[in-house]
Image (cartoon, helix red, strand yellow):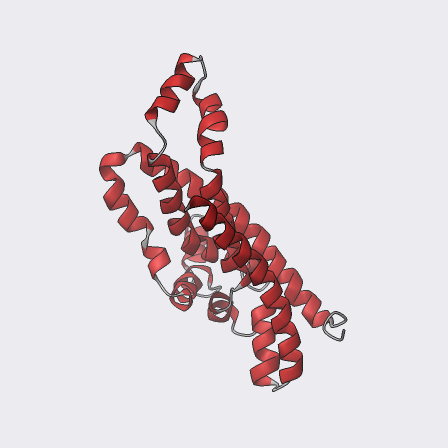
Length: 233
């Protein structure tokens, strides 16, 4: 019960849920867009797929360090670009605000997850028989109607897999935040808060209680992931 009454735990939970919401939104929209783009440019699909998969192949900590060079207040590329363009006069500490930090971290996680989801959706797109599209065109459906009435429903199993993968990645975020702001108290998610209590403060009982909460969340998403894969087999 002490976990549920802990304000720091509440803050970590809110941060985790914020990242979860952002990542789901970014991943679902971006991966679908990338998959549709790759499906249209079939001659360039191997090259574009190889480029798209690079973020997914990099370790999370490396991704976090790379993005820290973009958002760092002193030498970050984003501040330099905005100052040189005359948009801002002084550097902005992008990661100083917790809300902005969770948004940035969500972008980093999404950047990693989108390649996997885009490839899953692309494989599904290329498996859809052309006869279905021809029948839809004969019925007088335009491109928008075909997308929402034919393509999107047939992509639903893959979209559910992407939703589950995005959720698991968001809940288990750790390295990206540490790379950006170390173990800053207001920026902690459930995993970081758990790590701090267990290994820094050696409060193993409290750390175990937090672990159960994380296991519950990841267990739910893991169950959905396995169930969706079983349906496709």
